[in-house]
Image (tube, rainbow, N blue to C red; front, side, top):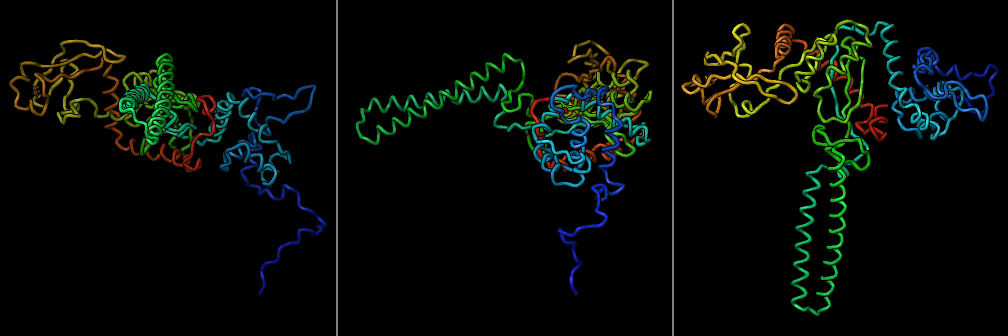
Length: 449
Ligand code: SF4
């Protein structure tokens, strides 16, 4: 038995196939074409959305946008690869009607239209909303660290530079000492002279490196920044599991119904603290609801940010992290001290009452400090409570906001699992889609686009 016979490449057909015949009715490229054709690119801020009256005609931004969206959906990320697809991929040939822009045109389109990508993403979210693809009741907020085009070797902190300068000084000292000793010994042997020449060369290299590091340290101190990155100046060293890398922190809010991203933003902050209200608030706005629940992990636990959520119609759910020196030392944690709002006091594990005695500024807020010196001095539980003369508990002025949130969490214990299921899925997909790789662009604005 033979194989299924293929058609000869020279075969003339009576009814030749059109490019459209190669693209199935449910192919995603048909959606890309319909979506982009329906957009008002001028309103979104795309450049050259109207052709120039004179000069050589350029590419329609709608065509280049279709190409980018195709690449995004098919893991074709670089402009050179997109240019290649335009010449060999039937779906792209269908999508662009046979246009073959070169890689520079494609890259320039992205560079020039950088600010328009965010409104474009919003337009897509609004379309999903129209199609009823969002539950619009709960969003999960999270951040993930993605690598930048900057190696760890080309990222410096003040501490790192100062350490290297100190090391260079020690080396210089050592080399000078060895040269002195060689001089004193008046060594005339040829081998010894060669060794001295090698030492001189090493000394010159260390001095050059020291000067470079000193100049970088001076620049870093003058800039007021915490880090200096040489390849991508906006990238920052941050914790990336399993180690520290240089990259960006991508923040997203994901709707719980179908795990679709509603809001996204890239920052170069190493921490998620302070991004809850900003991210969930923008998601609430684009989803067009008055109030929305937002759940996030402990990395978002910041009083001011949680209070800001309530002000903008976001109902936050963030579990309280166990931070502080008492927890690190294994003493009673804060949750074991119960606040009595009527008496304005805390009841400690021994059943004693801690009263307010001072107000202090803590970071950005005022904290009221509670204690009971007399009870602590005679308390049998003191070894489990504090190593000092008394235990103190700080209460943020606006702590009622956090207490309300704690009550909500008790009423909905499943919401933290829901967070994990909702937000970690898109991150997993994105990273796999990027082959666990890095952003291709440099600079915060480019990376955001
Ligand atoms: S040491 Fe002080 S705060 Fe701690 S349990 Fe005893 S009385 Fe209460």
